[in-house]
Image 1 (cartoon, rainbow, N blue to C red):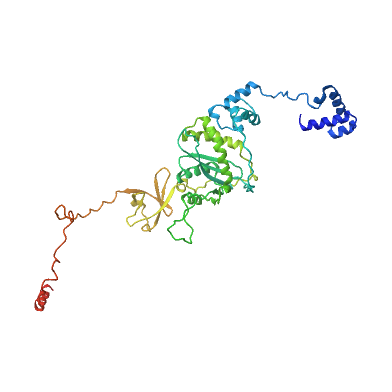
Image 2: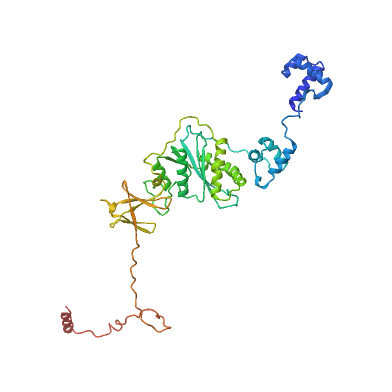
Length: 431
């Protein structure tokens, strides 16, 4: 009996004892006078249980005890270790055809010592930034290092890009948090969703050029990184976050992934990078799309497709600039490359050449607005080093193994000098 039932019982007993009228009791309980008379008659027969509903405790939707026992035994398996009530309820329905609500599982798991609710801690009040209004206005971009396979396979990184207005997500497992891997995920994102107006990232060295300690501070801005240059050529804006809280949407998505995605990979038995990416594409991203995305405040789409001027292979490559020498060669990755004779043009000598190292390994070079063909030159022959003849020395002496010192100066100043007449004669003879 709860407090509301006790209050109803007090009002009925006062009406029964004549301390108030049935009309006053009906007004207090917000029921009709006829219902008050029925409850008073039931109170005389059944006592205090008159205020309880006759079907209380006899729900038609109550789950069979055998089914509950079966569900708890399934959740005790090692593969479901660490699951909370929401994912446990989902996997019971998806894998074992046991459809129960997450609140029902929330009651079962503590009783079986499979899960314990954490106490809610009072946190500092944070003013959340409003979402952007249109899909494609802003995409947050970050990488997470985590034991995604829980020791079953190689170490992996998860690169994520999430739309700020709708929380639509794209992600990929990679082997390293490198420029090339981030470029590959950027290309896949642009091909699937188009170009957003801006990207929001942290200040990692992939996105921000780090100033050199020993170099003087210059007034002009530092050159962009490879990813920064690629975003400029794609026509994308870029915002650098000053704190992890600024990119909170993608940071919180990593917390969700470190719970749900890790558990899903465990149940799927993924052990390699390829298996993890297949699970992510087939199950994880559709699940995120169904559960966590929202409708943008404005129906307009801010995304832009790739244009004809956007050559993906050139933009998403590692670009460097080299000076063309007088013999139309330049150095790149310890190799000497030369422009073929048919592609030589005026003004090439001493000019800058754009060299692109594509992600598949090939090298392309562009002078002004045209690509040129290259050929690899053999390395220059090494110059022969002169050999120094060493004079023999007696073993055991300090100068053993070293050339002997000349002795022509010994006693030079003690020798008698020639007369003036003889010196003039010698001088004329040698002139």
